[in-house]
Amino acid sequence: MRYILLIYGDETVDQDLTPEQWNGIMEAHRAFGAEAQERGMNPGGDALHPTSAATTVRFRSSGDTMITDGPFAETKEQLGGFYILDCQDLDEAIEMAKKLPMTEGSVEIRPVMEFD
Image (cartoon, rainbow, N blue to C red; front, side):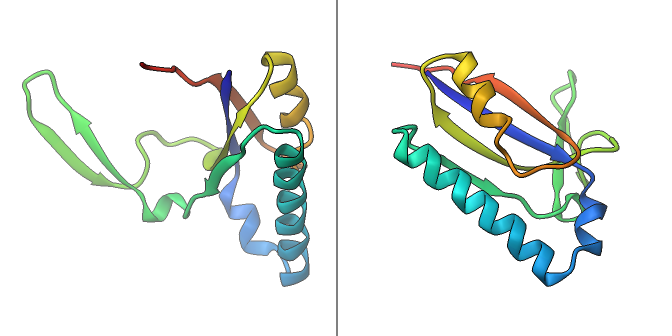
């Protein structure tokens, strides 16, 4: 089953990273992706630009839409990126999520719906 690992954290923390710290984090993500590939999980995913680059389309029951700058809801943690992995089960998805190079934040794990 495919699972998406949604990576949430405080995006303002990245602003204070040195280039060496940033490179270390990126290297850790490359290692995570390499392990997922070696385990046959067919990893996919990407990092996202900060919420300041986001645009939200809000739908109204009247049929109208409203376009706003920024994310849908204000939160202390923002979605920063994601991985999609083919895992045997939820336990394996949790195992992989625990290996993400994070010191703060959270990872939401959700099964991906498969359609014929």
